[in-house]
Length: 115
Length: 114
Image (tube, rainbow over all chains, first blue to last red):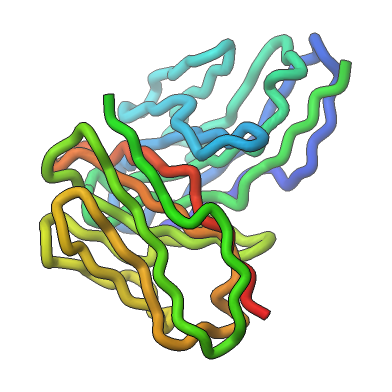
């Protein structure tokens, strides 16, 4: 089946430093899955951070970027300069273009940003 | 704007007792609906999906059942809880079209079975 592997947390980083969360996927049900990053801030629900549906393209939101790399089957999340408000749990996910199938999630990476 | 509400926020239940978790979506007609479950330290795992009222498909067997009695309502239940049912339950919706697999999640229900 499909699977997603991401950086094991927790990850601790100082404010204004860069952050990268690695995500690799294995898609057996579909050749070109849709790729997602979701985020859960403390006390809040899971929300979509960004989505990319075309291999080779980059998605961005709130200063975060992720590029869909079909060759390396990766979708790493990066931010050049984090803020304390970026402290959250980040989930990489894969979608098979099938609204009935649901999303396949990674385990999540807890990020703590310290001032 | 669409809103998704889950109830209760949290529950502590005894093994063998019944359970009912609810989810309502407002502002979107005929959405696809989903239940996910996350055990402590585990990943989010899809349990059920429904594309229309009265129709629910099971994805993972966990001795749970789901029903969709109304277009905007999705219920997760069991008559006998197990310790392994503890975790975090999330309801989600998506558009009812092919290639629209972006899902939008509710705030979740935290369940502890003792």
